[in-house]
Image (cartoon, rainbow, N blue to C red):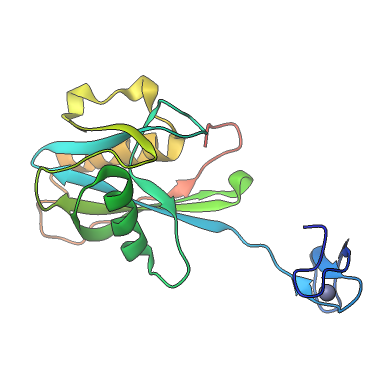
Length: 186
Ligand SMILES: [Zn+2]
């Protein structure tokens, strides 16, 4: 940000009074413009034993496989955003379940949240941001072509927990989550 979004005057980077961090401060009207991490919300859409993945039609990681996910919009909840992204990118209507994997990615200034989700039908189709969409059995997951470590981590946890019967037990299960290190592909 170079200019104030309120009055169009130049912005300076400085620590405001009563603050401890550098902020974008307007030289003219004094407005302080805050920047905070963005939420990426997505789902793990399941039909029977299979998981739905999308092959990305956009950068970054064009051509690689991912779970449907995208930036949360103003005015929606995280689960509504995850449901919307699943419809937009994969053409799949899901019944959204529990929050499963909140992943912090400080170096990308993002928090990524994946929800368990059950496809209400086997119908799906590639949205504008996907080259193709497909259902995968666990043994066919293209592990070397997964777009992001957050997605790879979520899928690894999911298959481990499913094999352990965690989702069928009817018991509360622990939300999986961790911080992605700068050395990992986001
Ligand atoms: Zn201003």
